[in-house]
Every structure is written in C-alpha cells, then in structure tokens.
Length: 83
Image (cartoon, rainbow, N blue to C red):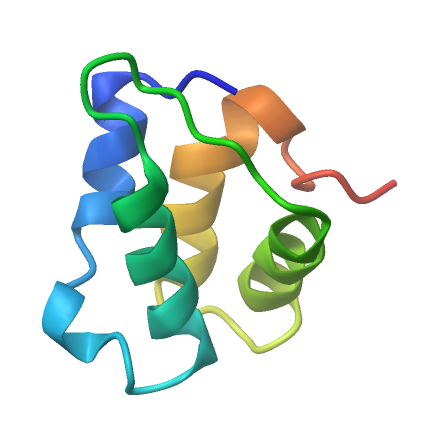
C-alpha cells in the first residue's frame, strides 16, 4: 500500500524510543521503520493485518483507534479490514 504524508504523520506520532514499551508501541515503531519514505510504500504482513484492527478496536480507545484509522482507514476501510 502507498501511504499519504498525513497517514505517515499519524504513524510518526509514536516516539521510536517506546518500541519496547508494549505491543502497540512496538507495532507502530516497526511500521515506521518499514515505510519507504521516498514513495510512501509500506508492505503489511499477515500479522500486521491481524494486529492493526486488534489494537484499534479490542483494547478500548486510548487514542490508538484514531491513530490507526487515520493511518490505515483509507486503505483498509473504517473497520481496518474487519467485516
């Protein structure tokens, strides 16, 4: 998928120093590192596609839902790939 500058900015809100603070933080930092900054291309794995909606919708909203929907809602839909 190709992310827009605004979508990348949503992912970049996560401080890279928090990579080891938990699953959500680790996911976002991992995604930050895998974005091709020149093209916006990001290849999501099957595990990413499972984890993104899980963190967005299954743990309550601590801002995570908004950030993940902001980053991936255009590409994956408002439910981030869930039916």
